[in-house]
Image 1 (cartoon, rainbow, N blue to C red):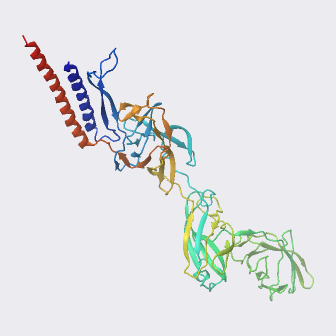
Image 2 (image 1 turned 60 degrees about the vertical axis):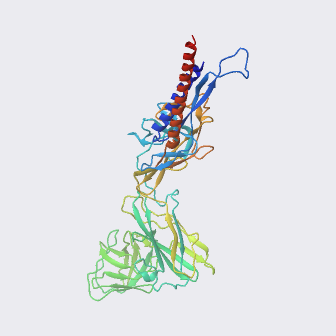
Image 3 (image 1 turned 90 degrees about the horizontal axis):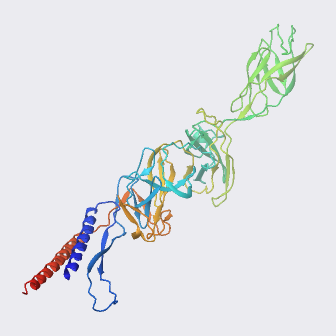
Length: 533
């Protein structure tokens, strides 16, 4: 009887209409995948086997299959909105229970975990302290809001300083020598770069380039305008013997300090030392000396205290302590014979030597370079001192007949930084952006693929779980194997085609009406049979 067929058609059409209605209802649901109603015909079991005369007894709903075709990608303002362009599902954790979704609308909770609207945690690979991925089992991704520590420019990981410069070969030697950072006439070219000490405090490193001859240059440096801390030179112990005519009078030597007193202050005392003039006043105090303390220069007596002749170093630079010269012996007869001993000692300093000597061939290429670490500088920030910005790599520096200029000037140091933003790369790397311009990997989002995604069991809220017919999950990084790529600050729209669904709805309505007509016709036939008598 056609009642069975018509009734099955009504039921199936109603279910198909339900599927269409569900598609239309979720046309704006992020990550939703359109469903399709699949029908199957129905035949009664026959002991006699199949044959050409068999008549079906209706239709049933064989399956509702979701179509995992790609939805459109729409941009958003949330960097943790992530879309998948290609195959795969986000892997979500719910206290150890795993589910899968295509809805990439994420945010962070109070503990920094990346979660969805149902508070399920997005999982991925963790990273070590250097930001390298640890390919272990996926775990919930957690964003660290801690500051990143500063890195000094001379840190080996920072890479020190790289400078690629052209030095104008047409220039002559500077008009003024020796080099002085405050005299522009003593150098040919200068560059500046921000560098960072061990506390992350920025400083301005200025380098000066001085032509010393054809194809020969020297490089000097200052930090925040100050020359490097001087390199101490240990003084030698010296003993000199002098003779000088003294006017008759009383001369007293006493104690270990070898003091003496001149009571007759008439005339002047002249002391000659190997051609070097010492000049004394009426009181017998030596006021000036011209000699060498291992370095070329002039030294001047600062004071005469407690029997000691105290000198200050006139060498370019500074002295950490003043040399002390005392009279330790005397000949009271005839001409005075005096022995002077440097009892205090002093440190002499040679300041701001060149840290680089570069040579160029007649093609303008650098042929040799004596490169030393930039000299240490004394700091007042509390950082390590003396502190040096490290080495400067001049590889690629040239000397061409064109204006001096910088091709590359970079360093790897930075100050401390706080987290100011997040982004996700196409391969799933979650990166933190910091106030110092640095980025740090916080983890890597993983995707999961299935051999038969239609075998997944829908759980609502755009979540699926694996089943026996879906196959085992295939977990991996985005853009590997058959897994898609990710796009930050975007979502994947529903793949529902509203026009097609409206047409399907009309079609199912007609199917329902036609099946109802089958029942009506069968009823009319039954009435005819009943009315035969």
